[in-house]
Image (cartoon, rainbow, N blue to C red; front, side, top):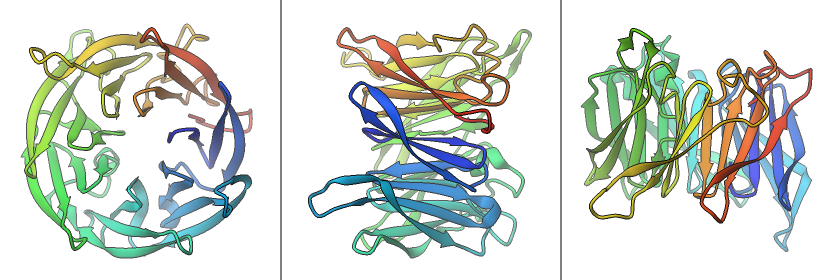
Length: 343
């Protein structure tokens, strides 16, 4: 989700929506992509395809007068020999980071510079073979998918470890910090904005099910500094996904999503709870996995995935913040019967 553009994944496809007045209209569908991570910035959509060891870049054509052509897209593939290349990806300020699994069975990440003159992505240099530092063995999907990137900060999480890499002025990356969590890291869906990092962690098992919590860190002088621990309710997998913008934190759980806003009161620093949101048209959002994926854009819009709605077809829900400060569902985006795990 980036301003007036939304990308929604399903198994094998990516669906692009543009805002048209107060509603969202599908303008493009790309097929043949597997079950892929997706990231976007401006008029580019980046799709990971780990089964084919590539990242597919779709660029909307913009003319000399800066007019967009919704029907004209350029496709380019970034290929690699690395195993599961495209397992995870993130883009910030025209730099693309792609996660993979190295030949030694541990993870690595690659950095690419966007060359807007010819719509190509040129490999810059390896970020670092991060998993030489004992993160994410070959079959640890959750760890390999936990990555956040913004500006010159790159955060990578696996098992009980959280790593911070900082980009130098010459474009190279160095590990500047590593912390060990007392509980296993679960997710960092969209976890990093400027110098704030948010992670969901695996809680102990309670008699009535699994609870959950979210930890907020700030990055100061290349080091993590713990700022806040937000504990969820028992039994709803609080922290299943997280989304972060400048002043809004969104936390997904099974069946509902929690919205927090950064406090402006000097006596109460951090994020404070504002609202719980659910899909309007379903009484069983827990079985649809509403909240499995969340994204927040610009403090004003939230996108929530429910990829098991109607058993397999799935939906995605767009919420916006109104003038009274309340978050309200604007639209349900749906696929069709041919799609699986849309959202």
